[in-house]
Image (cartoon, rainbow, N blue to C red; front, side, top):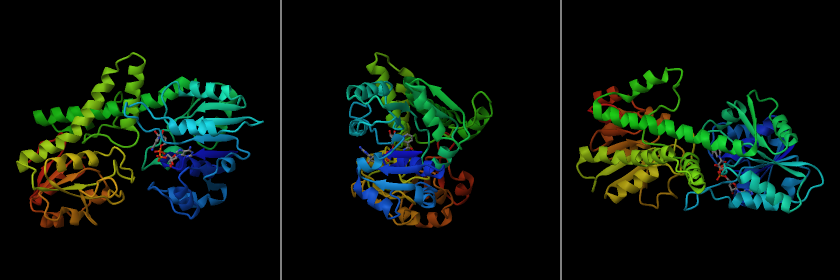
Length: 426
Ligand SMILES: NC(=O)c1ccc[n+]([C@@H]2O[C@H](COP(=O)([O-])OP(=O)(O)OC[C@H]3O[C@@H](n4cnc5c(N)ncnc54)[C@H](O)[C@@H]3O)[C@@H](O)[C@H]2O)c1
């Protein structure tokens, strides 16, 4: 089939590359001409493992354009993968989505508009009305939410746990299901509103687990238990399962914070107070700040102290710093009068940290003269760092391991003071 993907971001590029890999003809369209130029030159504007190779391998079935007309020529399915960032009120900003909908020309054959962007429940119904008002009855609408995670997006796309398709007309759902031929996964067919809710509810369930284990970790710290053993012990319960039980300094990224806030606001706008989700969000905010307390307890004051942040991306495997805990930590540390250095193997923090944080060329350089290191992102490069050499460079051998990623015993043997999350410290 011929597919157009609107949006050449984390979701759009992975969607385009994977559908091309499945044998479809794909045009990716973006309004950012710089991105399109880069892609045409074979440069990939984001860091996603395996993406560059996949785009290259399927080059003959993939084109990139900034032109709507070129993207829509003879197309069967148009995927919307544009950003839906939060507005100041916490609701999703659908400006880019409406631009795509309003740009669609009248067509004399069936074309399916498939929504991959995460949107509030009820968006599909509003899009349908808007298309009908313009007389675009030939344009079908399908909600096909995306569940890929940055860092593992290609594997997640080609081997998903499920494919969700919500449609007003089953013919359109059939087309989108056929597109996925070659992917072995259960297909959940639903009405449009339920498909939209599946995406928001899935993310709400995941953040709830994260805040749950983080609160367990905080109680472990207060009572002398070790959250790693606790997570292992509860994760083996088949009713609970082991995933998303890693205590840390909270979730970030371009999806979890905004989607949980959007669901909270969606509920509130409908007159319902989603108390559990409110608490989950608040726990996450507080969790990031607990690092400051851990530092202060040992260093007494942060004023004039040098703190090295190891990892800037919101998680390993990506360069994405949207809503990254590193940004909150850097802001809090600077506000306390600390000097902050940082290093990340991939993410470029220079634009986001306002020149107030020293971006070091290596982890050891970031640690030079530091009074403490904070592991913010559990990159393998940070876990496997030569910590003996790190100790030589630091003013004080003190690590706050915000992801429980390091070998606490080995560090203690090297003379480090070690603080994890939800574990006894020394
Ligand atoms: N990032 C993820 O891992 C992920 C996972 C699941 C769902 N989602 C959802 O997918 C959507 C896209 O997320 P993302 O992270 O890929 O965003 P992104 O910001 O990386 O990319 C969005 C792209 O859309 C482009 N764009 C804006 N208006 C456009 C238009 N009219 N036509 C064509 N392109 C346009 C932007 O220039 C940008 O390149 C969001 O709704 C997000 O919530 C993201």
